[in-house]
Image (cartoon, rainbow, N blue to C red):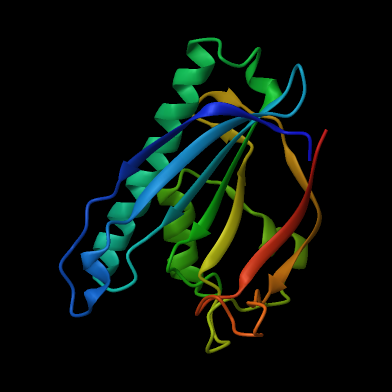
Length: 188
């Protein structure tokens, strides 16, 4: 509510790997847009989709590309004084990362590659699990928040509520093979 677009979107296409499914035919990417919350505060919102089929090494490589893209983008807007101060900037990353939130090894590798964002769903729900993949055994979808990128301390994002929901058409048909994550966030 009452957020004004910064009139610009940045993006980069992630390198892809040929796989045994047609998933590799679609370019996967990361995109970001800077939004004005009020006269002082801004939020840099990023979204991404990582290749579903392929090697674990390649998925990790795509996650590293996303982390590097976000880090460079945040550094640039801070250094160019597009935001008044780093303490007035919140950074959120959301999307389908095709990495299961409840696999400790994969989750740890993903968080490291993305440069240590907070998983807002896991933080809010603790050990309670919700699934976004249609087979109800995995959560591939995330809303992350960064408290720090590089040497820059950022404005912290808190969660009022966050959960999984099925979005359907007017004919009661799910719009995706994934369930959505909906969050109500607090940015002081």
